[in-house]
Length: 590
Image (cartoon, rainbow, N blue to C red):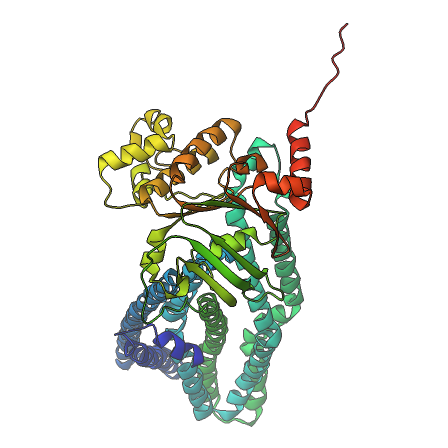
């Protein structure tokens, strides 16, 4: 009932179809018992009139059995149809609600949550609720109605045979209860966790296949993916073996009614004066007691499905249980484009320590500042607080004199353009990918940014030019080419503030030179905060900020920092050594 109440929340406009489906399924189950009664009546007529002419009632019972079976089937079909209508509505609304929440989530959420996990929960897990509502839920009514009705029948005719039937039913039900109890539910949760982990790692593996092929590696190079598969396999095999004997015992006992009925019937024959009546009753019990096995199996599947559906809803709610960034009731307009961080502290959700501590600096409008330092020091965190990927815990991040928390979301996004090291293009045309920067851009503006971003040679080699699609239907671009397309998109946006996070990290020398030319065009007259590991790119920036363990430990121009002989001086020296380092090989001549 708990999972039903949750799912009904998503069944807008179709909530009444759920109880109606259950009612039709219950009536179908009751009518579905009638063919067994009518067949039993036919057997009774055959036995009692074994040496006489068969009465006309035999034909009547035969037609009644057929008619009731057809009516039961039609009612069950109607129940399934109504359940499917609810299931499709719930599945659609769950995905719609989840996507609406995702759209309003902080941009930082997508850095911390893998796309594989999001896809698994929103796509696969919501389909689990469909299976529960459309297929298993209608069986809820029959799982309740059939055992009660059957119990009434078996004790109405012969209570001794009824008790004989009840013994294997009780043993089987107890076995199933143990199997589906705490250990079973714990396994189901672990099973879903393992599936989610595999799905997430599989997405990352597929994305890395080009690297695997280039370096002639195997699946073992993707350790986490390989481990997730092995853990899943070992868990399932271990669980399956643990229930091998209990399940075998259950299947044996649930199909052993005759082994209990026949001995009891033989014992009753000694004290019964009506052999015919006892034999007729035995046939009734042989016909209807297997229905218990069907009902218990339906209950088992219903229990499994309801637990899976409940877990699916929990996972969806947990995934989307991230508070959207608060919007100020009265927003302010940005009038200047300097960047100011004052006493900023920030800790990622569920983290124990701050990612950055007491960060304060200002970037004057039109100037370029750079962040350098070891990986994990907090550079990317600082950069992503400016476009408000997350809100600071203490202090403030301002553009001009306006706190970014008091700026309307659309205006903030229009003021900031960012280019990251991992560029992703949509699986649509190059033109559509570029126009995301400015959907209303003219053809002349697009041609201009393509030239500035050094994309002309990319477009010229494609048969369909800008109308070429990314992906299997068109073409694939190298990392450097994707980066140039992303820069063209940023140029078209023409935002006054630019955030660059390792924009040339994974490019080859030729593409790097072209990307630098594009970056020069992108940053002209803009307020720029950039992150780069290649220190030669930072010689001409206005200020360099050295970040270590979430704090700024040095700040000045390139030349002044070198003259101070501090951390930056050491970084520069090590970088120069790495640039000059080459691999030599002694050549021997015969």
